Length: 512
Image (cartoon, rainbow, N blue to C red; front, side, top):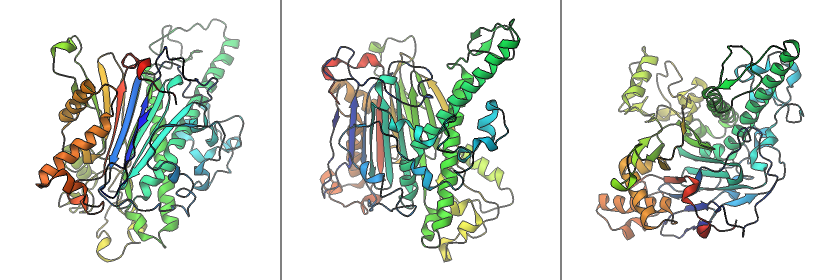
């Protein structure tokens, strides 16, 4: 465990946290037993495939007080406990009422009102279709935030939010960066709700699989001749129903990605619903939005979801090459850039709005926003939200909304022995460094300081480059208060995940 929080008037790094995996032979730490996490995360128990991670961030925009979104029910209760921690900390096993209870308007509906087969639930079910008190179906309080042995860290830097949650014993890690813009509210909302929403949908997926297993088992009682062997998720005998579900197959991985997408869609709907309720008093909420980058590392499967221009970059060695004979790993970008600078995104946007000659103005969507996908920014998605704005703030000729999508890019990567680390960063990092430069900097730092803080090092190097670009000294740049430093660099948030349990040692481990 390592970490540091520097929060002086000079504007140093605002968030810094780290987590070191326990060594296999480290008996000095009391490992928790009987960890209770969602059954979806228990789908395939395996050892951790990450050795350690670190996170760091620096503000350019002024970090305002908590905005108390949703009448304080989110901001006042969750966010202060996540601001600028100096390390990971254990979350106790005590069920709590999900904060989403305050946001959903139809939680009283019951599963008994549904008439759909279990195998099609994710296509026809809404999150709100489940009662939190139901004993036979997943509930919001099943979130693995409530499991024993879970470690969590997070923080705020300007309009950025960052989260990291892990259970080393059960082999999973969740990391997310929420890059807010036009205000913190959307990023705050995500930091307070998205993780639990994802937990719900993963539990729902597991419940679906259990129902499919029961259905197949019942079928076997009537057809004793049914014999099915799974290989890579396919039935070798061609039977349409399988008793055993292969949870390492491509179909299962796609269903996990679908669960992440459903969770994001739910968060979008809830946030915009909240905006509609609050916009009379706070019309600025209609322009607030956030990019989303999250990864779920479970066993050797790295699931990636992104909306906007934050990036996940994998450092990997080419197969068959002796790592001692080359300078370092190669950079592979795992995410798409959802901006008008991306020709694919720009062309798709123009294609979707053929009757609007002002879809892209001055290199921005409707002259307002560079990103083409984001959570929130309701004024570019709904006419009534745009009408809440006055004068020049309102988008004129909102011909065919929505102009900004919350449709994420989804990707799953199977971690191999050639993969070294993954860097997650908000776009402010890549304003100054290319993917290759980021990988080279982290790689060189790890070689020099094997158990140091590569995320903090990256942020420090960015400050050096930003100062050099502005023709000022690093000390002069850091003396500029947040809020006025935006002309030198953006809010920057970085997470570095070092992959592979072979890279951790008991000597470097510290009790949590």
